[in-house]
Structure formats: C-alpha cells, structure tokens
Image (cartoon, rainbow, N blue to C red; front, side, top):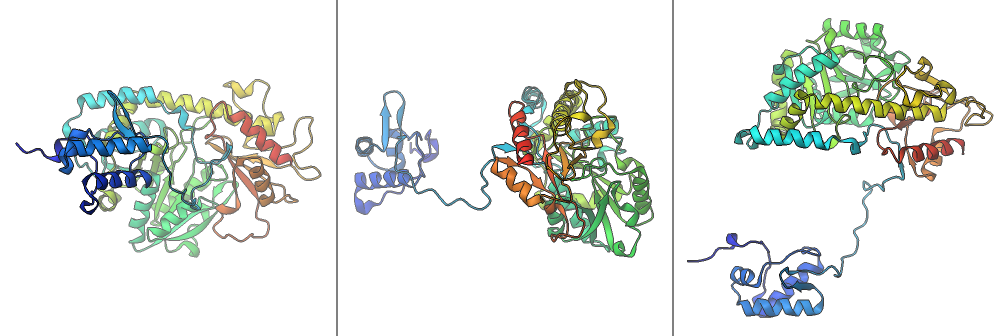
Length: 504
C-alpha cells in the first residue's frame, strides 16, 4: 500500500537538487533552510524513515545527511528526542527597523490604553469552558454579520441597565473593534445625501482619518469648557453634515462632560432632521466621583448610533465592539459589515456573552474602576496634593470637585515652572487620561515633550489633536497623560519621572 506525505507526523518542505547528488542535494537543501531562517533553532525534523519516504531517498542517505549536518553544528541529535536544528546557527543580518517599529518607552503614560495585566483570565477561562461545552459545531462556521445572537441579547440588557441605552438585540451590530464600527458608519453616511461628518476639535486624529478614508468629508466642531459646540450645528457651516461624532461622557482629549444644554441642543438637531449622532462611549464605564452620566442615546434612540467597546474594560486585543443603531440604519450597516469582513470572530463573542450574563463582567469593571481611581488620585496628589485629602487616594469618599481642574500650586512647594503661572490638570472625573494644560508664558509643549522623552516618559501632546496643524493665536498647549497602561508596580516610578520632567 503506497504511503503519502500527508500521513507523516511532521511536514518539512525541502527541494533536493538531483544535479548535486542525492545526499549532497539533501545536505545543501537543509543547510540553506537553516541559514536563511526557514528552519528556526530547535525546530524538530522528521525521522529519517519519514523523510526518506517523503523525498524518495533511501533511509541510509537521509541518515548520512543528518550525521554530516550534526558534525557541522547545524543539527543536534539526542537519543529519544529526535533530530532538531541547533541553537547556534549563522543568523541573517538584522533587517533595518521600519519607522513604525517604535521602541517601547520606559514609562508608558500614553492615553487610550488600559492595563491589560488586569485581564480577567480566570473568569474568561471559566466562560470559555462553558461555551465550548455547550456550543454547537455551527459556532466554527460562518457567522451572522450582525453578531452572535447571544452577545447581542446580553448587550441589550447590560447597556440598558448600566448606561441607560434603549435597544433590542435586533438593533445591535457587533464589530471587530471601534475603528471598524466608525468606518462602517462613515461609509453609510458618506454614501448619503449629506456626506460630511462633524467631529470634535480637538479630537483623535486617527478617527478623523478613518472617517476620511471611508469616503466622508470631516468638519471641525469646536470644543470648549462645556464640551462640543453642538449649538453651532444648525448654522450654514454644517448644512451638509449628515452626522456628528461626539464623546459626551468624557470628551477626548479635554475630558469635559457634555453640558446638559449642549446635550439637548444635539438631540434637537438630530430630531429636527439635522443628521445622525454618533455617540462614542469609549470609556463610559469609568466614572469616579458620582454616578456615570447616562448615554445620550436614551434621549433620541432613533437618531443616535451608540458605539461601545471592550477595548478599555477587557483589552483591545479581543477586537470586540458594538453599535446600537436606529432601526433604519441596521440594514445599511449590516450590508457594509458583510462586505467588510463578513462577520466578527464568533467564539470570543459567545465567551463575552457568558461573561456578561454571569455578571463576571460587572465584577471586573467594578474592580478596574477602583484600581483606576486610585491611579487617578495618585496622579492628582503628585501634581496637586492640596486637592486631595490625606486618605483620599485609597478611600472611597467623593473626591473634591476641584479635581475637575486643579492647578499645580503644590502644597508648600514651588510651582512646576518657576516664575510662571501654574499648569492645570483637568478631565479627571472619569476615564483613563487627564489633560495637563501648560501656562501661556511657557515653556512650550514641544519643550515639555522633549523633557519627558529624555526621561523615558511617553505622553502625548495636545497639538496633534487639532484639526488644523498650525498654531492658532491663543490656542492652549498641553499634555495628554494616560494612567491605564503601567502595571501597579511600575506606576509610581512613571509618575516620578513625569514630575521630574515637568520640573526640568
């Protein structure tokens, strides 16, 4: 009975040049594969019997080739362990580092990143076991572009209970991350009669680029101390705006919460035929000093698309986000999703659904909320100790309202910048970042960022968040400081380096 290559325990692709001779050809093929990295160190090779049958060579020929390469140091052979590629081999020259391969900073205080070491591995594994024990084989086939019914039902209940979102499972579309959700909405709006999208200024530059690449034109919507200037949407400048993207619970990057009057103005604009409101609730679960502000979607559910994500609560690596859509948009968005990637990965959806329905997700979010609040309090106490009571960083009492914007006039200490007005910390009532505004008299933002970089501290400047890159007169300068990424052990040292950089 003939033997086929598919029956062997290990697959190995080698091309033996018959012109070199059988043994020499095999030696050359294996040697070249090891030298150029196609066979990595410690790679286990097939047995001599298996490789002989696969290549059509005799077993003695394969054994002789293996012995020669062992003698040359390319292979190692141990009784009972087989033959493998040796650890010490000639390595190819290191490829030049591309501009996108950034070296990890020593102190990572970049915003928009959670502490992924807090991922609830044990709870996720328990949910995974339950899912694998009960799921039908169809879960490994093609899924529904709208998302798994189990997750959509769980999200409808969870969002109604925790964020005040009014929705049924049929109005929810699960996406492969918040970026895809925004892209799908921009694609639908861009194909409509009003192809422009208003976006907050300052705001996240990457999201603006996502909208542009989806085919829509971006209009800047100014942000002030009350949040986005939604009162401007009825003006001529926004006559062609088919949608507006806002972060009402915790504006990025300023951290301000959208004022009630602005919320009503936004809902009135949408209900009056102005367009679609896209509510990006990227970190709405993390409110520290009082109850979270309810979702704007509850005010006008047929005019607001609510965008939520697991990236901040669990981790961006899951690639799970969701849209709660007005009913008339479900069909167009599902069609766009089908043609984007057909459907989001199914198994993770079912695990998240189990995590939510078992309330393990709630417990995890509450634990993260306490952990991030302690980090927030420590950040403010280092920059403005007078604003926090002695026991406040680890206690659960309300933090003074002064934390909404606190000056760096340190208790019994000189200001960070001698001889100038103090900087201020704002936007710390929620989320995973704070904005540190710099005094008008200097030093400027670029100098402070350079001082941070010199101490291995990675933060973001405010300049890159404006729609127009040039410096406008009177435009504030500042830093966006994230406190989610460092581990618990590394966070105090990161703050030490930040304070040192600000005083440098």
